[in-house]
Image 1 (cartoon, helix red, strand yellow):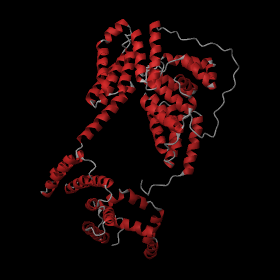
Image 2 (spheres, rainbow, N blue to C red):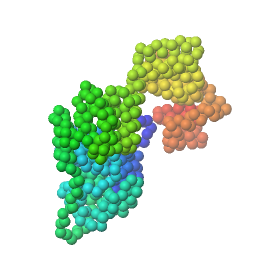
Image 3 (cartoon, one colour):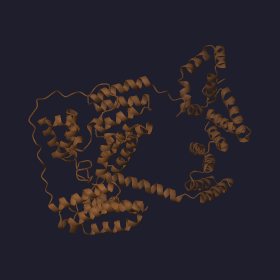
Image 4 (cartoon, helix red, strand yellow):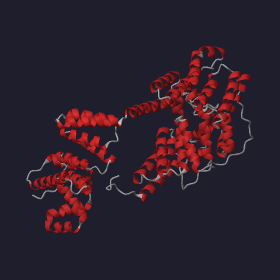
Length: 584
């Protein structure tokens, strides 16, 4: 961060935060986001602002943005448990169940008894292991089947939250929720957003059906209490109609074994979990779900089981139509997609990324959902990183650097740059490589590229004097004399006797003296200077503006001011070096 950046304005940030809180309380989430964004501009170091804005984005179902703010909140305040609830909630709704589980676990290390974190972890783990009714949409397969009406889940939420219980007594509200549940796809999403704008309780009910504690959807430190709904006349309690269970006795038994296996899996009791899944398969052999869960256990047990997993998955794919004939839905598109995902997971662990990517793409042809798309992107990034890492070889990098040096001596600068390019790919941590490529780029008149390389060089080795010398030369050729002088002086701080930096500094000072006395304005020099943020900062300083006016009206008085103020002297020196102030 540049020292010239404005200091955080805590007062303005607090004022913007209060406005955001008020809008959030009024359910005006878009307006609240604007105010929290303003608060962040005034003070980007306050984690609460990101937490509050994350809650607003989550309320609008913009979970990608909610995740960004949740992650930033955790980065700024890693010891604050609430930040992990924000981040975990967004990951859960993005169907990144593995990430959500890890986030909730990290939060629980800080607050082991936090009920929200415990509930979040349970929901993420249930979704990860395909527990019936778990996951976004409540269909257990992560397929993004839309918002579904689940009376049992709603009744469970009402038992924990009196507010949900009170909502359920409103017949008109429940009819709206039931109607929305009957829709699907884009129509459902559009109608839900419209209904939520009219009545926020609709969103709270759907969240409650998915096991989310709606009390976590409020920002911290609100000064106004949650509005209390008007009291309603008590109505005789009616028993919720139980959803008809269409499973056969065999399926019920198999699901019981599967549930026991899931619990053992979570406890990492893998051998015992395998026994439970085998019992489920024995009862209902023609359902891919139980085989998939078993394969998940085998993957966790280690590399020696990977071949067995791949053979099992291929067998399931070969028999998918046979399975569906014996048990309709036993090899549905969603379940087959999970098989491809299991195979992709194995290939990814074996670093066979091309095979993994192929499996993820096949999974998408069966069930195009966000979870698989995210996994595919992660795999592609992992492949890119793996290939870069596999290409690293410092010995070969040094060979390319030496070849580049030979070409440079022969004045074959393009060929030298090509060798340095390859050397950097082989060893991107070698500061000398960037410095040498910068020298070749300078000879090729590619000064901005040379400066980027020199900045990277100095990141790797801040004591590399040669880099400062070359940086000074690049700025000199770009007529950025103030920056050139600064680079040479930085080099001389490290090595006061360095001849290249001394000669370069003298050359720059002579050029500054020449241009400042010249009657002609160098438009290129001024254009470069005016594009420099540091020069812009100086010119916008009220003290500098007053000094420049004083120079025109009373040069002698201005000279006295400058001589008595070191800060003013430094600023004027930079403006002279940049060609903004002329002495001729």
